Length: 231
Ligand SMILES: *Cc1c(COP(=O)(O)O)cnc(C)c1O
Image 1 (cartoon, rainbow, N blue to C red):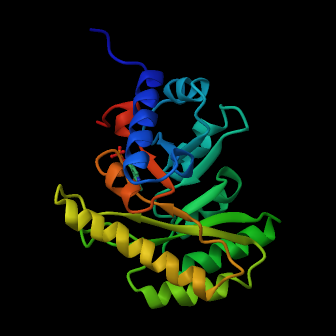
Image 2 (cartoon, rainbow, N blue to C red):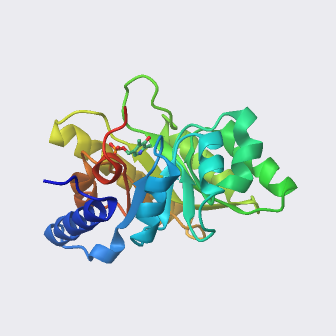
Image 3 (cartoon, rainbow, N blue to C red):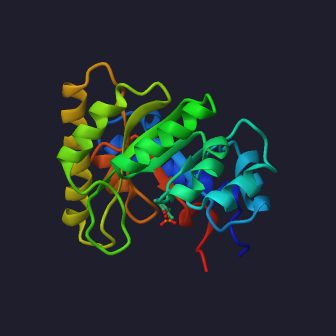
């Protein structure tokens, strides 16, 4: 048997999104698929592009800027990894959306750089729902609420919703609880800040996106199931 192509993999993932959405009583169009292309070469990303994929996620600023400079302009490139202060300058022109806004300080520095460059950056606020080391994100809901209030006044930031990474476990209820927490926070933000857009819920990866869709995800971030494992 020959190895499946990127296009085969995309078709398979899109299929299973449809099934998961339908099982959850949701229209499949409500769930957008991001192809997470971190560590993968431009040739594979181009294959995905040629199969119709436009939304991509990367977690390293320099790597993403280099690779996506070689791809057509009509991609939608999201940063999904922690953004260090010294990388903000490179990140601002390279990304269309920063999903990993994980502290008030980062929000402030990002806003300042975007203002300087006359760019309005789309952002998601990342909620920390897993305690494992290395997982970044706001750990307190009240801090997110406060930052969300501050973001309302920022012309250079356009908030679109929340992002989370669930704990790495096959314990379904633990994973679904993490997603449900994120959705509950979204509901609070929506009712508190009615003039803002919190409609995007970015949650779910290769191993847990079906559960995420059941818990209301509108954007799922899939790497391995599309591009294969990372070594
Ligand atoms: C790597 C990564 C993904 C994709 O993970 P897979 O298990 O390969 O699907 C999704 N979200 C974030 C934040 C990631 O860093």
